[in-house]
Image (cartoon, rainbow, N blue to C red; front, side, top):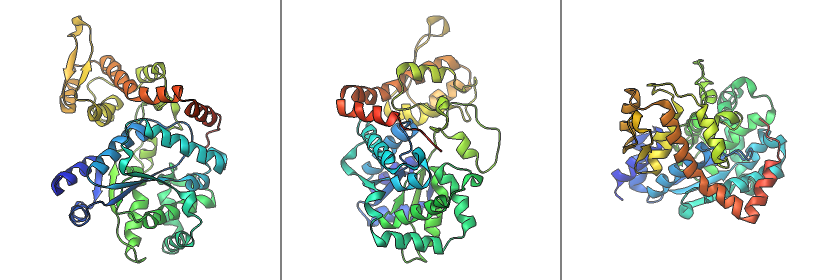
Length: 357
């Protein structure tokens, strides 16, 4: 694959790239750049944004030649009081999440799972954490609270001050060239870029992927914390679709979803069509009774958006189609956990854990 093709593939992942010029230079000078994403094992509820969308994005990154490091941020989840701050339970959830990705289409040939608990034993890591902390103000660190799924006012525990310093240090400890995380992680990635050179490291490139929105009506507020309210979140289970939801669960949630006629902006049904369905399928069939025009096969997202905006597709018909395709994507994961005795036991164990924010 030539450099331009690699660049275009990575740009498909990035809603924002900082900077495109640096990314192009990296691809020209390094055959296999190191990209990373991290995840907090915070409960059994791994939703489709964390499962399917993450697999789609990582597959594009590795296809473009990247070696991908998936960071299992168990100590970060511990610092953020997830699952009651029980580290052993957090680590069991981490193992569960890895198994979900193994079975939802993620190509793992160039993906390495790295546990934070394996390198917290290394003094060099904590030196990087201290360097970050010494060169940041408390006010700046609190402003990054969004990376923990928290508003600034919700950053209360001392460990939550430590968290962003650890995340910035992760980037340099893992020798990361590309930070490929969600837009909600942008603030700490920018912090790492700003500190990198002065600390004797480098300026990592940021490729921030789109944050899939939840099923509910978008918040009317326009403040800086709106992105937290808008995105799909396990803390709002009625507005999220999980990788272990039943077919009936999926249908029920989607039937209740926000989907106003002719409205494109922040419409979750169109979002899932764009970022999931048209990424995984060559076309999308919308089944309708003959009196309503009969079944229609749509080959591109732009075509779907145009037809919906013109009122030629009814919200109920779009919802039915989206439910069908999402269930089709989740079904292999559900079946694997149902048939494999060890995975079934793992799921049963993590389901018992109390989810805490």
